Structure formats: structure tokens, C-alpha cells
Amino acid sequence: MEHLFTNIKSLLQVREPGGEILKGGSMSNLPKIDMAFLHIKEDKIIDFGSMSSAPDTITAEVIDCSGKFILPTWVDSHTHLVYSGHREDEFADRIGGLSYEDIAQKGGGILNSAKKLQATSFEKLYAETEVRLKEIMQLGTGAVEIKSGYGLTSDAELKMLKVIKALKDNYTLPIKATFLAAHAVPKEYKDQKGTYVDMVIDTILPRIAKQGLADYIDVFCEKGYFDLEDTERLIKAGQKHNLKVKIHVNQFNSFGGVKLASELGALTVDHLEELTEDDVLALKKGTTIPVALPGCSFFLQIPYTPGRQIIDNNLPLVLASDFNPGSSPSGNMNFIVALACIKMKLTPEEAINAATFNASFALDLQDKVGSITRGKLASFIITKKIPSYRTLPYAFGSNCIESVWISGQLIS
Image (cartoon, rainbow, N blue to C red; front, side, top):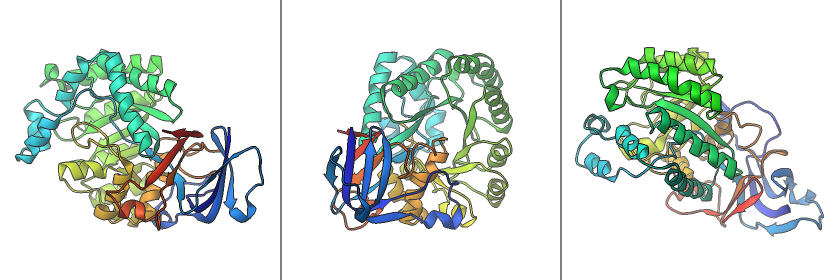
């Protein structure tokens, strides 16, 4: 099928093939074409440009986009989409004054989700996750990473990753899988964290690798969870199985995790709500990409990642949702972009770049998604008739999206 979108008020994030991740001042540049056309065939973008050079074709279905903007779909590089049940009671506990750590200490948090997931069948878990995947697609997400980490046993972790594989097989949007058994220490390993890490490395990881179920390995590097020694062991074990590295770090404390991740060549470090000058220096010395998760800061009422500081130090920045049942129960990337502008002091241009083009590098998908580029997947958002693309973060409570196309297909 062939489609020609015409009279586009402005076609955003138009780029030539290739290019490096955007850093510092370059993040403020959002290339666009006013009064534009976009030509797609099957699942690919084949051409775009000014309406004055639009093709005179009779083979394509023509769709008039007068007054509307088109931009690439969001790339959400950090989610925990596979889970069972919800944690509304913990939400009420936080309102009552308990902290995230307090709730975890009394058996809530990740361990609560793990208990529920372990008792859920593959079929039910897939069905619940599919609903959430469809929801974020309708909200404009056209590529996504999904983590395990609510299993915490060999069988349950594999069950989660097999759900992700089934979604990969059944949907056309790019999906990346991350192995995160080092998300919390199970109750049965209380005071035996080292033994649990051994089990993850020696028992679960080889099974994951043999079945090709993961693209990345992740660790929750945080006080009360996994320390620097644990993190280094897990990173190196994953790398031996050819898994790239993505690390949860500096959510509540800064104690050297960023430096370690950077030195060991992690692809991304995610969270960074607490960030020191030493952390910034470590990032500047390496190629690890900082990823901010403002939805978590909003929901837990903790500090926001200092995005302005990161960009002003000539570093790249990525935005992601952290969609999960405990600390960020929303995969709405439109809201994430708005939060980045309102709370992290990013400009709309920087925020859109962080959630599209830069985010594609955080998933090794820069050749497929993240920009309007010839040869990339035809995955894009068509807005309603709005006065400016800056309306997207400005009108944070409104749905500015008219339709979403993923891999050349209209998402209904």
C-alpha cells in the first residue's frame, strides 16, 4: 500500500540517513519543512519535501493534512511493561507518608509485583501486557524497550521474556528486551544477596542467552539493592553472553555507579535523579547515554534528573517513560515530553529530540526509527489542527494526536 500525505503544516525531525546522537547545543535544532508532503510505501518512508515538489502520483492514497503537524513516533527506551496486577495500595501508602524504601521494607514494591507475576499464567500475562502495548502505541510510541525483573526466579524471568518475544512476533513496531533479574533480592535470599547474584549469573543468564530472549542486561544499582561489586559482576557476565548493558543508577543515591557503568561501556545509564559533578565528568569521558525518567520523579515526588545540567555539559539526553506499576504507572510519552519542559527546563525542541532521535540510539534503532528519513520505518504521529508543535508539551492535559502510523499501518 502506498500513501501520500499532503499540505502538512510542518513536517518535523526531517534528517538525512546516518548522523550522530545529538549533544549539548545541537539538541535545540529540530529540522523541519513547512507546507510539506510525506510519501510512504508499504512500511517505509520513500520521500518527503516541500509541497512544491510533491509527486503527481495516481498510485498512492492521498491524505490531506492541512493545519496538522507530522513528527516521528516516540521511542520509549525504558519500560517495565510486563507485570501482573497493580499497586494502588502502595500509592495510598505514599500519600500517607511512607517512602518508596519504607514500602519495600515491609514487603511491597518490586517484591509485591514479583509475587503476583509468579502466580500468573503466561497467557494471562501476555493478555495484560498486550493491552498496555496497544495503549502506548495509540499514544504515539512506535518503538519500545521492555524489561524483565518482576519474576526473580528462573522460570518467572523466562516467562516474562517469552511474553516480550511473543509481542515481538505479533507486532510490527520494534521491541527490545532487557534481562533485569537483578531488580531486587527475593525474600528467600534475604541476607544472601551474593548467592542470588551467583544464581542469576550461573543459572538464569545462560538460559536467557541460549534461547536468544534478551538484547540487553540491566541492574538496579542502588543502596539496599545491588552494590558496585554486584553490578560489575552482572555487567561482565552479561557482556560475556553478548548482551549490551543498560543500568538503573542514581535514582536515590550517587555512589559511583555512573562511573562504573561508563568505564564498562554501558549503552545507557537510566534515572540519574541524583547527579554529582564526578558523575558528569564520568559521562563526558565515555560514550554512555544518560536517560531521564521524569514520570518516576513526578509520581514519587523525588528530584528530577538535571537535564539542563546534562545538556549544558555538551552531553546527549534521552527521555523515557519508566512505565511500571509502582513508580511510574503511565507510558504516555506526550506527558513525559511535557514534564521535561516544565520540570527539567528543556525546550520543546530539546525534549522532542530526546524522545525521538536521541532515544533511537538508546535502543540501537537509529537506522530504523526516530526521524523522518528516507528508508526508515513509516512510523509517525499526525497531530490535530494545532497552532504550533510547541502545543504538544504546552497543552499537557490535552490529546493533540489525531492518528498514529506504525510501520506504514494506521493504528486504530
